Image (cartoon, rainbow, N blue to C red; front, side, top):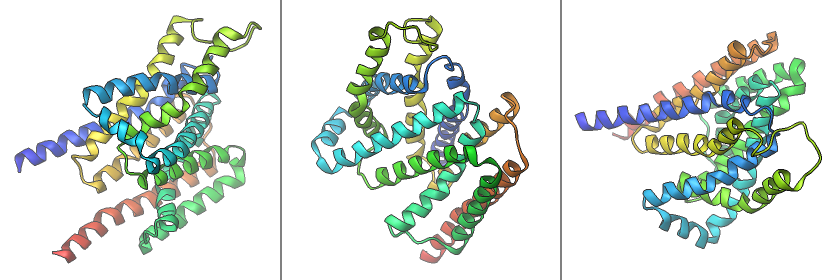
Amino acid sequence: MTGQASTSRLGLLQAFLACIIWGVMPIYFKLLESVAPLEVVAHRIVWSVPVLLIILYFRKNLSGLRIAWAEPKIRGPLLATALLITVNWLVYVWAIQEDHILAASLGYFISPLLSVFLANIFLKEKLSRNQWIAVGIAAIGVSILAMEAWQTLWISLALAGSWGLYGLVRKMTDVGPIVGLTVETSYLLLPFLLFIGWITFGTTTPTTTTHLGDNLTIDILLLGGAIVTATPLMLFAAAVKKMKLSTIGLTQYIAPTLQFLIGVLLYREPLTTSHIICFILIWISLAIFSADAIFGGASKKTAAT
């Protein structure tokens, strides 16, 4: 029992660290404001491939990668998720650089609720009455925000939609998180590598953006994007194996909460009345959703025994 509790605590620590890294990521990408968002994403994808391959090598799981590439039922969906993750990362980096951190955080607050809704439609997973109430309250909050901040609402919906669809397809695909991301980034490696080569060496006209080789600090940050991508993923994947799903579900709100606080307190993004009302309603819906996941799951377990 003591060993199980120790393992659970380690899992909780790993999940917290992963979510904290995701939560403070806006600060990282703010440091790359001089680099165009598409170029930032290109470097993040290109340098992730060797880092992920090294991780798989030391985890002795290169065989899992070979199996994934050999199986059409895995390769096909991962091509779709590769495109979805590209859209998600591009919108996210652009939003951070354009001072829309609040809109980005709202997207990731909405995402778990959207994921449940998508699972209801495509996987026929039934929603409880409380879950439907939570989704309804969230929809009201988004509608209120749309009346005043409709110019940036697309950011939140694009992030929530791309991440929700990404999670749906990955849930339907029998592949681990690290192997899956390796395949996804491998799909994108060649086009983005050619893009980096062209903008770095092929353009001679002066631009207002910084490229690889122009500044040592920027170079380190661009290369470090692979570490920033892989580290929280490994931590979270390890945590999932050690923790209850209900507890894991609660930790996913840490990242958008940190992003929200960073946007308001550090970068002084304007917080309008509609923002406040929307976030309050989203938080209420998440509280209902989380309580239903915890206590609903407990009651089912009691009934089963």
